[in-house]
Image (spheres, protein in one colour):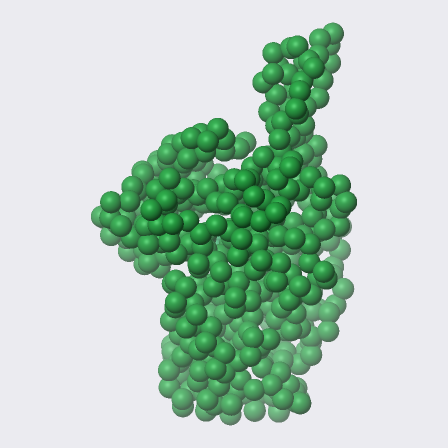
Amino acid sequence: MSIQMHRRRNVGGTTLVIFGASGDLTSRKILPAIASLWDQEQLPEEFSVVGVARSPLGTEGFRNLVMRSASDWESIGSHIENFHYLQGDYKSISTYQSLTKLLDSVEQSRKTGKSRLFYLATIPDLFGPISMLLGESGLAQSGPSGVARIIIEKPFGNDTLSAQMLNSDMHRSFSEEQIFRIDHYLGKETVQNLLALRFSNAVFEPIWNRNFVNNVQITVAEQIGVGHRGNFYEHAGALKDIIQNHMLQLLSLVLMEAPATMTPDSIQNEKVKVLSSVEIPAKSDIATRAVRGQYHSGVINSDEVRGYNEERDVSPTSRTETFVAMRLAVDNWRWAGVPIFIRTGKRMSRRETKVVMEFNRAPHLPFTGSSARQLGPNRLILRIQPEEEIKLVFGAKVPGQDYNIRSVAMDFSYANTFRELSWDAYERLILDALLGDRTLFLRADEVIKAWEIVEPVQQAFADPDFPLYPYSAGTYGPKESNKLLQASGYGWHNS
Ligand code: BG6
């Protein structure tokens, strides 16, 4: 099957300014995405990149880094002259004065306009200071000769208050329309497909509600541990790292009402509405609604792996959670009374992100066989990664004289169906930001709503007496996570 390229979209001459140019995000994600977009002819010749960082790399050093990070893409060598570097302190106004001069000279030599996209690939503590200094030095202003836009990536604050402060710091220099907040899950094709599945098919809508759906389960399971990010993870934990952002995004796309149009505000309004309907549990109820765990050593794919407490940069007595399961409720007309179970963990038995809609059982089974009595409910499984598929599970008659009914599955696989090249999330999101399309980015109020949901949980977890259950690496989390569902007659869908 030959792969089809995407049609070219109209990015005008722009300079991408990467703060944190010598860091991990730049070399792992941003530079490969740029190189791939060039390979696919999605970027014009007049596209330049200016890397800014504290390291004394120099332009040569930065170009070497670009060549190493993007060595898998053919055309990077022929564009290497488009990369420039500025060494500077992020908190000093003189860096921004030098940046203004460098941008003027790059734009003049390449005869581009003055469109600039600032990508803050730095630690989050610098988002506020950098954006304010960009504002002070006049770089945040859009004008007739070009637009200024800024990309930041989660985490957006540590709690509701710090997220509000970050929003207001950013808004001092940039309007909301200029800000592109990345949650890379929204850049995944299969996450976008949640909207296509729900809002381009008449068949699902009538059953997508409390009258037919018995419960919803969302899983983000990872096999990897914390790797070299121990330092970061000690302050984050699964709740802030995955639930506050990726999981609540998945939840809102699965449960929101249909947007009037596919414009950013239409979609974001619906996401905010559903997030506003998520019941915010009282701190005293968290113990019966949430389970947290931490992985111990275990075996994954026949390899022995160490426990979280033995990871690099992690305290041996750390009580940071690497697993969280929660029961949520969405108090609106569509979902009242339907439990929404979510869970995420590191070092789980396999990597999988999926949404399972479990439907009510048939009201009456006229069949006598025992297999019919054991028949599971209908399920719609939306698997987001690693295999991208949609599966409908239903009962079918096993061939033979008796009415033996067994659960079978109807499968749709992305890879087997489409020939189009699937874009990496960063390619898609960077291109959208260059085009000024905010559909797949988070709006300021969405971020705040998501923090309001997790904040009481965060406070409960801060109590040293809140249980932290161990689980072996290579399993599906602590058994208490099963009890959370079993207590009300439900069970995780694990296959
Ligand atoms: C990041 C988290 O946002 O998402 C990581 O900080 C996590 O801890 C990663 O591993 C998961 O992303 P993906 O695309 O591999 O599911």
